[in-house]
Length: 241
Image (cartoon, rainbow, N blue to C red):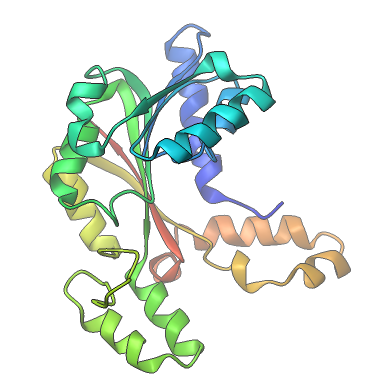
């Protein structure tokens, strides 16, 4: 398994939440959680997970995955949009709030972050994972898509600005920090995800004993070391109310 700095941080937060709750299951809110890629493993790990997701098809897949994994009782699925989060979820009710791949596609990121912040329980955190503008520029330049690379660099929100573009915006480290701070949150960590791990082929890991552990150590360090962090494929932030 490839090293993942994000999961290590989330595991630490869940351990802290269990301690605060006297051993009771941590309460996780996954906004835009889709088909349960995060929710089902978290439920398997013993968390009580609420997923807010606008797509009925994604929720149907979530239900199937949850039943197959035997954790349907630990997952609550709510069909709805982040714009209506205050009406769908009790305030201050989640130990860990996940917004992974969400802020790139919402109409108003500031309003969404404010709504997310309102669901964080005392002592809990908001975890945000977003696409990195500068990584997208480098990836397109390396692949020879130089016009797209320049467009991403110039565009106000780090988008391609073309019809059919999936993302409305991408972020850089400073912009992500500012967005979270504007909602009254204290940013405790900004780290990169997939700083160097995506650059190392599976054949290298298979051919070199100890390479997986060495890569994990390198990725963990690179994830929090500027400027390497700032060109990671994705940026991950932990913010507390």
